[in-house]
Image (cartoon, rainbow, N blue to C red):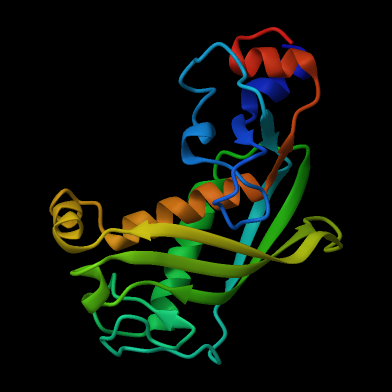
Length: 220
């Protein structure tokens, strides 16, 4: 297997849309676009780029500052840094930290990029929805964190620190109840979004025409 084929086969190739305005993170992409190549569409739509992991992640370090304010108030929009109801009452700093670690582990497990790196995430805001919001109108889960990528060998910064924002729709009313009954809990929703966001943020465009063709089945 030559070097090009090896890189292409190991890379978790994704498709990014360069034009999605609704996604707040720094590299915009729709959820459908992330799986377009794996569905074997056979073509690359206009405005879509093929991307692959930039790094092989050797370690992920997550920090949730204790200075972040927590609210347990059951109002529509508590004024706090951490609002989370997807776990039983407990240490919310620890709970959201565990979610970040789990999402990072899932996002980076299969990454095989050209450079070994350590990823650091420092939580800025984790604002989910309260019971009052979830069982009436629904809302949005907002997760903001500072992302830094370091060279695994030297510790030198490669990327960041920079703010990354992730948003996930929070169902409301009967839709929320139906999701929970189907096993799609709030934790599943936010973890899924964080995984997608991290994969995007740790990937870059593929310029080699052969790799684009391999990923999509469409010659360029």
